[in-house]
Length: 94
Image 1 (spheres, rainbow, N blue to C red):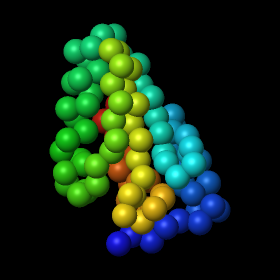
Image 2: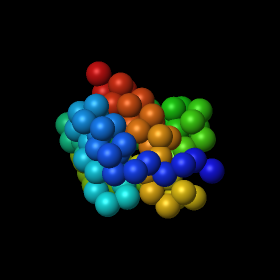
Image 3: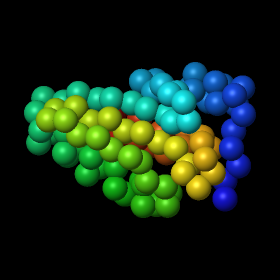
């Protein structure tokens, strides 16, 4: 099981992520797209990095908006795995 990060570690890592916020024990980002098709295309891009990391986001889709939530459920909060996957997801948007 991955080790939980402390508050200082979380804040340090969060400053390195653009568009992500720390909400309780989760990292969260919401992206807006032109339409539903583009939103789903973005969600489909999350599959490969999530599978490769063995770490899967919670995803909410509302027409053209996608909200991605990351937390390490078995650890009970944020770990390095969450920040690593957030960085990979952010790179998909470039």
